View (spheres, rainbow, N blue to C red):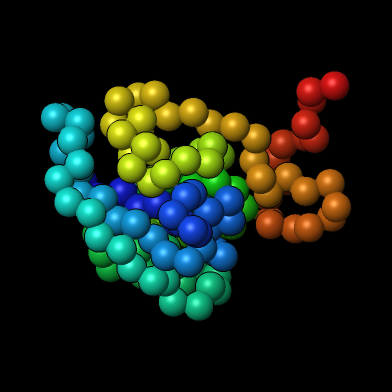
Length: 129
């Protein structure tokens, strides 16, 4: 099984389309172990580009921060499961937590009250008062 994590400056990138690189993990989900790690610089971001590019690496899962609905659908069409709203952490921590069923998910960073449109409008605003 292969898991991709978009990163910037060594940590999860909140917006996968603006990441510096993807860290690609070969994992054994039964043993809950990371077998190998690789890094790859993505091509320029555009609709459907990154899902197709990652499918070429035989990626099964992407662990991401924010992601719009159109991007989620494009990943699913490419056969890649999307785990989004992951909290900022190192790629290794995210993958280990995912394998152990302990991945913490937070608010969608694509919920922008400033009108920024990531193509994602499912959630309301932050409900903490």
